[in-house]
Image 1 (cartoon, helix red, strand yellow):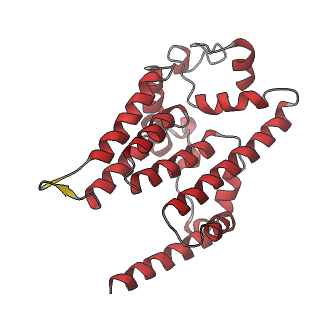
Image 2 (image 1 turned 90 degrees about the vertical axis):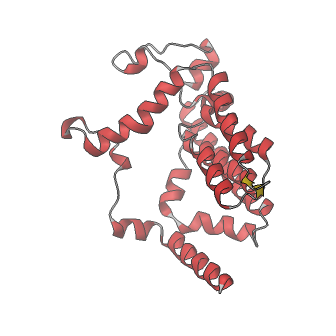
Length: 242
């Protein structure tokens, strides 16, 4: 699709999907990814897609390192390396030329801005998110929980300034998207209807099966390092409070 954008330009129709709801409500859910893929949409597309996956994965890990450093996490380089070796599932997904890699980078950057109480940066990252991945609702939720737990009351009232800026960023990103309002319809389908079909739809029409829960043994085996780090963090927090 990045090659289509490069050669034919932006279009509000997608004639290849005539048997889906997108026939009448076309929206590119990975619009920013496809724009960033245009420089790679030449020659051998398969090889260049692999090159792009390395570039995007490296950028995501770079954002993780910078976020950890900005939050003054001790030994950010060690934590970045630990993230790469702690979960085979994460490493497998990181190598995909898919929008969730960029979405993860934006989620990390936005969360860092929220924790640092930088509302304008939170606005920028939140505004970019709707053009990258359909999980853009996560940043306003994170901001809301942050303000509920950590924000200091202003004149006896709790301040939700960071939440307001983050939500405003998401709304702005949705509206300025060239596929508005179809992008909202697509978000509704992907966030709610796909899950509904995966969890309770007919067996012969079940979609989104990758969203179903995995077995406990598989979860532990593929993410052993994550669970060890989480247990260590809980222990350190409990020790600090005692």
